[in-house]
Length: 424
Ligand code: S3P
View (cartoon, rainbow, N blue to C red):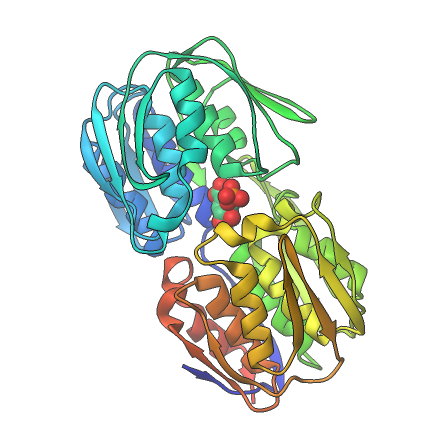
């Protein structure tokens, strides 16, 4: 798909429901007692995989519309043996094994080509320590898990990852005793917030989270706010294209997700939070973005989990900023849907930007002018495809995005919305 340069972005709009929260609403609804009413559910390739998974495990889900669901829970230990196809969804693959670890059954998980080379031993290993039988295929999918009687553990995460943290905490729901996860850096806490809303005792300390096994979960309803990660390409595009001004309504502003806003503020970005309120357990607000001149900055490892999915977009901000920007301590990017350090650096170079990949990060030499443009290979990774599209708008000659349809795993209507707010 060819994305032509934009003269200005303008408009008021909302983005689809948060993907992390949408996965969790289905998974936790499935093991709840009674019905869970989910509104604002973010329908995408990845969340449809979770919908298929919970149905295969025996939970009925009624679809009242594209973004409204009723999940009929089967209770904490009521999931039935099944083969689960995770497709491209890493969050599904990592979180669900935690729930399966204490069910009475045997389950197999498979994934697409990209998910089948992503690490799974990182969740298998702590679950084995708790007593589950887990077999990976050389550390990857396909994975087989047989649930059993689990003992609580104290587990120190080897890497800052909300997916691993969540898998261990979810296994803790069915273990005897209190399960504690110690985090090297704080990561997104949607699991903790939603479990608490379902009546589970979750104790958080600055560097750890503990969970006490409940008798049952009762979620009732979940209102899913807009996905900050889907808002991010628009935030970046409006910042980079002169004379732009956009407002994005009802975006999730969980501080563990909005690191991009702090980084952007340091760089000189003009972002205003117009209203801030709560929807259920999560913070939500309207964001106004105006174009701005940027200066380079450095992102260090402590900050990385707060914008982990937005780091490719940070690379594009850096390309337009005065000076050299650096990212450190982001080795986890190499284990995403693709090696995002390599994919990003190749994408930036392909449009005429000076960028360099490092073992655990990257650096970009910014020039406050539009890059030439060219051809960006998304490698089938939705976040790289979105980066390529935004780069097209802010380029001189446009960008051709290869495998552009990969955006569908998180945001099927992405290009239509981008087109609606673009003036050429
Ligand atoms: C997610 C956690 C992050 C993130 C992913 C969604 C989640 O992964 O990159 O897109 O919903 O828990 P890691 O936990 O591997 O960092």
